[in-house]
Amino acid sequence: MSEIFDERRRGLEEEYFRRKDKESLDRLREALRDEARARGEHATTMECPRCTGKLHEDTYDDVRISRCDTCSGIWLDAGDLEHIIEQENAVGRWFHAFWPGRTK
Image (cartoon, rainbow, N blue to C red):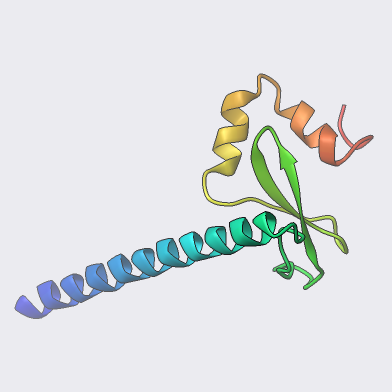
């Protein structure tokens, strides 16, 4: 029985440290973006996770959105979509801003 508890404890510890690592990486990426922006450089040189195209940063309602120049994919940071939806009465306006002609 104690083996089950030990495995559960180890699993919880691993999840905790994965979450802490992700938070640290997110803070580091944000700091690097802020530094690049302060130097007047383009905001990002990240690759698209879908097609490895180059991501460029757009801004929509104070939310930074990474957009792929190859596949037109849109990538948001954690919590950004919820923030956009809270500010919008109609989500269609947001989609129309990035994909004109594809929404009603």
